[in-house]
Figure (tube, each protein chain N blue to C red):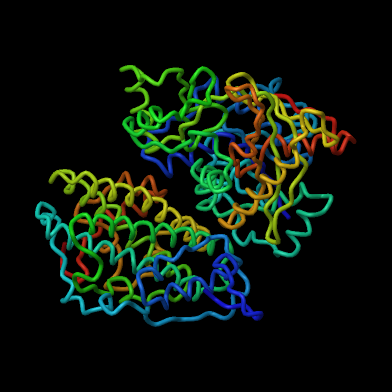
Length: 280
Length: 352
């Protein structure tokens, strides 16, 4: 809550998108990360671009080296404890997405207003996903912070040099890959008799299609027809097509997201890789 | 400025439903598509000669509205993606396929947009005010309107979102349909228009066949809005524009709906009639809806539906906001037609 010049408390609605975004990135509590984010908040003043290098976090959620946050494979879904660790990692992905969509609102003040409103809407949906995963974690007797978390997305901050790069990395790489992972985990959760977790993953998958479509639409708008080449030009190793898909690639989800044949064929031809760069 | 394209996507709810819910959501039947195509031709009221008009389905020339014929619009149908780009676009509703069609760098200055929306040539603002499609998806979901209605105490008694048949049965057992005509109730899909995708029943006992039909609709949409089916005695609507500086509301207009609640005509009569005694409350609800839309990041035209209804005791009650339509509406088109006819504020009737 901010204070106005007359000492009264300003309601969240009165804060600008940039101020709300900064509050998310700088929040050191989970409640702060999940604070309501009205997509229609005023978009003025936007101020100069602000590049935040790392998010504030509660102590138990500070970013750890990748080796500290190893996640069980999908086969671990059969085991309640491993399933909880998987859900914890997925919630951490959503937390980073929340922060990075806020980061983009701060970093790209000159982007078109409708792009910024879209970022704000998606940020709210990432918050909802995070809450859904946290609810499933709670149902399994755990909570955020029970295991170390990594900076899986934040580690690639250097690649977010423009809105085009942002949609290529966040939307067309990480969220694109989740079109496969969310579905794979959902199938596994259902197979082990956890329909509630499966339903959450299916809902996330459905939203992810729209998020990829958002990225695709803006890439096409900014870079015209050769979106595949524009994508390749905008992501650098270790990211790239191999990180934008799972081992099994769901073509239907890509079609639903609006990706064209050239892009889909490019993804199909790419060998899926792990964050380490090893083959998946 | 380049050429201009009107997109008469009156079937936008299907596209939004496909984006937000499990589906499947088939397109309109050919008969419905033809009716929609003819109705969409009224967007010609926003055109000038030579503009292009895209319709979701072919409509024979004799079924196009007179203005579309008079203004010699170039009518196109077929996949929207295959329609040639345009310098300016005005759509019935913002969707992802519309957004893909918009030219790059189409943003206008906020101050100029607000001045346009607040001025006498407000119809020109409709070519410049549109939301991000992600926002349009969110606010056209019935849950958005229900949330505002519950917050303001406007929801019909018993109105609720249900996610499975057990949930529905619990609400019905608790009297959710008691305000309905002879206990009638309706289930509405969260994204639907023109009376499509809804089921009306009269009995709290759900038969086997009905249960299957309800379960199918639930599977396609994930959740449904339950309401008592009340005795509507007078339908209103109130249209407005959300612009960067706020909300412009127009006076409420009357709706002529058929007994199933399907739109037939919008009647502009700002002087009002005795039945319109509660129009101030309708306008206030419209203003609140406009502010909620603005808070959600929406920009563009909208309307709220409202009605007077007779409760089981015979008392007449107002439902000041039954739906929010975050898109163009026939009420706004009727207002434009009234102005063009030299009757700003009416009385004027736009009938499909």
